[in-house]
Amino acid sequence: MEQYSRAERPGQSSGGGRLAGAAAAIGPVSTHTHTNLSLCGAPDATFDGVLRVAAQRRYELVALTDHVHVPYVTDYAGHLGRLARYREWRAAASPPFALVIGGEFEVLAPGRVLAPPELVAACECVIAAPNHYQLPWIEDPPADVAGAAAHELACIETILAWPAAQVVAHPFFGGGKGHSTDALLAACDRQRLDEVIHRAVERGVAFEIQPKFWLDPAAGRLGEFFAVVLARGGRLALGSDAHNLAGLEAWAAAVPAIVARFGLRREDLWLPAAAGASG
Image (tube, rainbow, N blue to C red):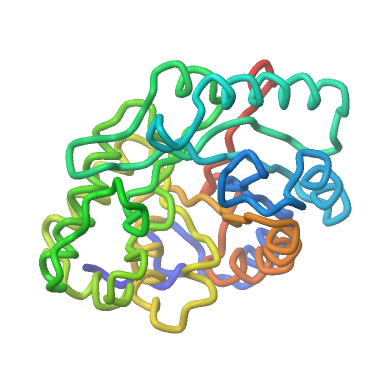
């Protein structure tokens, strides 16, 4: 896979002034945020709590993307009802930032996305996880690193083939299956990885930067991957994957450094719009 610094991006000036200006222009954004609607959400991750922290930390945008699991785990009718209430509460609260009511869906196995149509339709944005391997209903990848890398690529390809998908959540994180992110990326077939990037750019599907990458010293290759995505005209999503209010607080502090590292401009980011929002 090609390696680009952000300054080497085709058509991009390498001057430091532009990057500094871009960093100042983008405030905190979380396009992947959980409330206590998710079974793994902390008790403090209430709708009101998220609004309070996001307003205090001057977020520009927060997307609520609670998990949709298999029907014997997620109560689909109850989930739909909560999403409807979130939209009502948003209208009543008029938060000082963009608040989008979406969902996080998941790949069950290569070629199979868990996507209940009624829940997909109720979401204003859709992110999809290729690697929820910690969950018992998700197919495990092979034990060897080459097989695990091929499985990860197949799951990302599955997301890219799903018309509703807008973001690949936490790419190349193995869910505790024993391989580092760097090892998985090193084991990927180069041509196939190149085709995945091409397809994502072509479809406008973003890859997510989130704490699993930002805080992991064994994820350097993923930074190179993100740089190549940007160099080819692709987009990134900045997702806190917060399951509690502390996570949302911490992510607000991390975003400026991420923006500076990759020289992000607003057009490099996937920023969903709430239903009925202008622009």
